[in-house]
Image 1 (tube, one colour):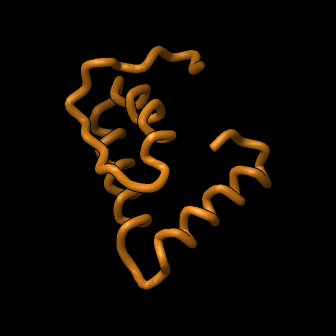
Image 2 (image 1 turned 30 degrees about the horizontal axis):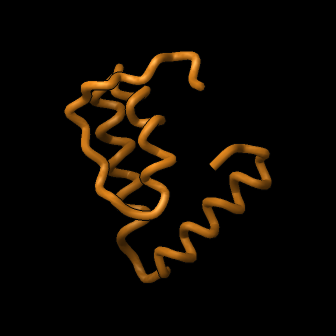
Image 3 (image 1 turned 120 degrees about the horizontal axis):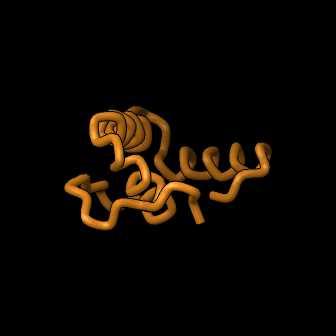
Length: 73
């Protein structure tokens, strides 16, 4: 549970895909600052959905980075 309560009724919408369920709470907390949340969502979507690297490999990398840093993902 986050220390800052998530915004339940936010107009931010994250596209469905790998990792978005886990990230939903993060972006609902970030919704307290909508401009920051929108830019962060754009960065995440660009990083995970474009380029030549397979999205599944990107997801595995994100999981491994969180393990190395002892973070829940």
